[in-house]
Length: 90
Image 1: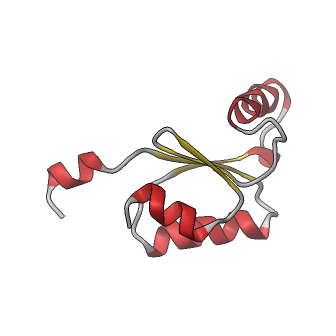
Image 2 (image 1 turned 120 degrees about the horizontal axis):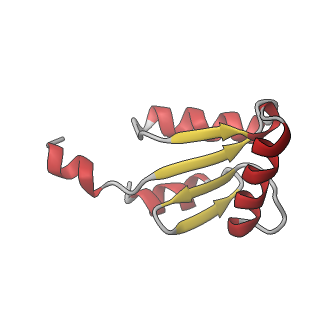
C-alpha cells in the first residue's frame, strides 16, 4: 500500500472496556485487517479523566455501551464485523 492510500483510510478510535469480550474481538479483528486504531479502555481510567471520556462516549453513543467504535464520521456500537468492514471500505 502506498503512502497516499494510507492517508485515505479514516481514523479509527475505539472506546472499550479491558474486560469486555466484544471489545477484545473488535481489536483482534482490526489487527487482523492491519487497520491502525486508537483505543481507550475506559474502565482503566480514574477520576476526572474517566468522567471526561465517558462524556465523550455519550456524544457518540448516549447509552454509553461498549465497544463504541468511531470510523471517520461513522459510529458503530458493538462488534458488528460487516458494518466495520463497510465503514473501512474492506
